[in-house]
Image: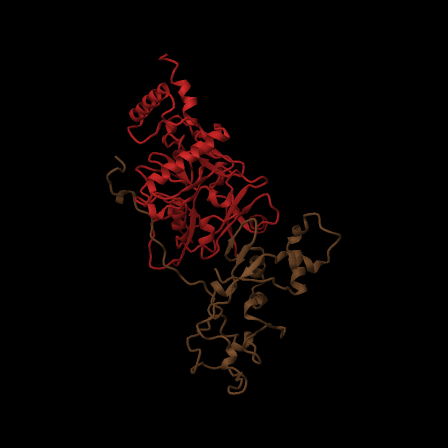
Length: 310
Length: 194
């Protein structure tokens, strides 16, 4: 009765509601107590504690998990937050190209991304880092400054290079994750299951692009700034203690929309599309422009390209 | 963006031919009905392209409300503009260019191509494309300039003049949005990092 018992409710609880049987109720409370003890956080429900890796969930379990999340977000933010789990589109691998000859470093993309993807506002977590580089030095990251703040951009003698998740074909961050909480989807987007992430930050150490970010504190997201249109693997509000990253706005792009950073860019430096579509803009860029990958020598094989559109 | 005009752009046959040489032949990829004549390819390439209205200054259009050819005679003389349009700084190859190279002298509500053909302000990209052919080709395929909408469907295109002032085309400098917080400036707060 004692040693093996916790396994059974682990399977049963996800679909049951509190108040089922008294034995179940007791075990649920016990598990919740364990969860509280383990995490030092009293808010974790036993359903959440017992939830499996997203990729192992059945359709019904995913439905229950999403219903639970929507309920929790409603309680927390006082408004409807829709969580979807739209699957990758068949025959699509996303690619991104950024025109270094056009970007003026205005950081519109950085802030549009924060708004779209429900990042923590204080301290503000930003998935895009715009580097100011010197024209004389070229793409030399030792001469990069991300804190530039002149009255007007572009500054004389400088160019700008936004860096975000490169959606690698061989993502080192996925390789090092000890629990399999992050993986590459069929459409080439590397995603995180925030409920499975243990917050060890190995992925942050492994990523050569600094593209992963950690919620050191409870993400401070004011209810009136929540974007209610979310994806389970993308911009749904995150808990404290998990890693997050750019997902090419998975909640938008899987519906056919451009990512928020593409939509906002005033210079049209950002190009996005399907690498498998011969007529796409992205393919035109790859076939006709001078293109390079950041840190290509590391063999991470990014699906994010930089080009000179002049 | 709401006032976007949906418009099928008619293309001169010669530019359609140009498109084909650009490698857009891939558009014919889905099993095409028996060899379509080349000009239709161009039409296909432009499907779904939407351009907004040209950004006129308030109350300036139609130009013919002043330039009606009667009360005001056409003066082809290059000169400093004093009476009107003094705000226009011509910083677009000023040595070799003058108003009437682009604005049609006989009908000021139209623009004028080098060939003498008159076009509307809403297709001004044809005029720009006469000199900036490389940019024009890139714009057509969606590589130069901003696109919004859907990566696998209808897109909204901007006209050249929505981003570049035609009289002074260099992209205007912008005030950057705030930089990220430096790690040492992040304040500890209740419920935050311990």
